[in-house]
Length: 434
Image (cartoon, rainbow, N blue to C red; front, side, top):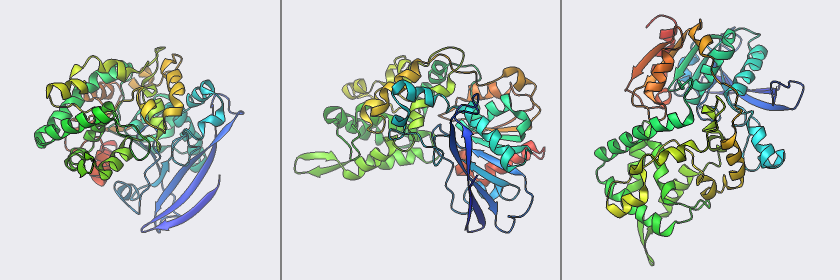
């Protein structure tokens, strides 16, 4: 393990790198490097503080890159030495993308490699790291979104490593198939879109005008992304964030500019859309998004795409033709994204192999969760667009001793937006103070 330390205002940071097995069932085989950033309050570097592990949402995103004591980190540093983990394949942890995956071989070999990047492997990485940095002492974990899925797996397989688990917007369905997840998701997305139009009624016509233009011209964005109507609709993913509706409104209001050749999408609009839609920085999200629900011997088989056909209100072409309000879509991955996004295009065959896979290992142990003894607190966001509230509360009732805080004060990104308040509330719950 290599160690490098440096400072930001009020915080001492240490870069840590660990060697872990690619396949934990073959510990003597190939190893990969996993990176994590330790944070401790300045002046407390030499104290024997308990550890807190942060598991990021995603899948496919590295841990937050904070500046000083931003957001919830300042509250955590009052009590803990914090480890911000880049889950395997993300950030600085042996990154996975279209550039690195060909090193594994053909599409089948790349898909087999990616099979080692789900929550089960992330938790086993965490256990190896815990033994190394914490001397085997149990630690507290904070799981945001997909990080909460990882935390639930942790409770299922290695609860002895935990002194407490805090979950924010990330209680998964324990046994639901990806079809069930998306069948519940599309009505939530529609509600978010209609709420956006109620807030910004002028956006109904603006969105329809942009959709008609995109449908006619399919412009190629500055990064080579081909903007189709379905791709434009997928900007609705923003609507699950605390400021997402406002961001979408500001994007739509300045979409067009006059040019010698007639009205066209502005460079500014195109640049923002290119950044929002590209998976260049987080391809694991696209490759494994449905696989995070996969267990029980069933293939995911492009669940979001298949289930979308059950909801004709999301047909963009019909909305343009009929003058109906365009329905944006949300957190879902589709085959067409591997055709229009240059960062994903070389990985289409890999994605198809993963979508057809049926031998995924189980992720959750309902019997063990029902006998849980680890203090657990979960923030369940009542209006969460990304994680179904009914699924989350069903899981909450299945984990012995789990205390849930159901709130509509925050969207899915409540840990970021609410910062110290959210973390403080959850810490109080597991300590019996709230």
